[in-house]
Length: 320
Image (cartoon, rainbow, N blue to C red):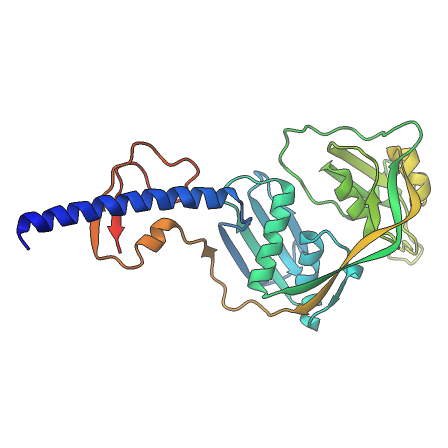
């Protein structure tokens, strides 16, 4: 073969390679548009110590990150799959005792529901979690709007911070105490789920309220007894009534007995995560450099929109 033929062959191969890579990048972009809903990078490791934020799990401002401190796998599952602990069964005993820290980041901002699905996929991957889902007809509480309408302030729809909501002690201006729920930027579906944790049945959102709201509710959960250091207990606030009285009075909502579908999760298999390492999805560039034997200059006319490769126009690509 002459040097001219060799050069021509190399040039043709390079041109064909660049065309293939360009098509591959576009295919990668189209695949990414289908949204596999996995975090770009994530760290899962055993907790060094539980305090100060034992059991904290939340989506962080910016709609790209999930953060957890000192959380058990069962607790993580309640958040990821939006179920109460009583809806989870099976699995090894360490799921309720061993605690883990999680830092996970998506490649771009996501909706709250998408981040929940991404957390599900992360738990299934890192803990090798195998679940069986069962739906059963059960007595439930239907959360509905009471006569006179909602009394909750509507939250700014542009706010992308979705702090978690949980049962806490609320001190009144007179020093009295009452358990309650305080939350900002909460959907009614999330509020219903939070109420489920304090009720004997699952709560299903039937309000028809589509927005996000600020919630400030004080009530005395069934079976809860408040006791102070001296055993006498703190003074109970005047608004500290049962949930069925508090909801219409304070929020303009009500609970109605109903029957509905309730999802249960049966953990058929789970493993503790191995040695922690942050894992990042392999890009087209990383796959192209796995077997490097040469370099070719590929000229593209414009960036490939949506391609998550880091390859820019006129970039040098490595030949396999």
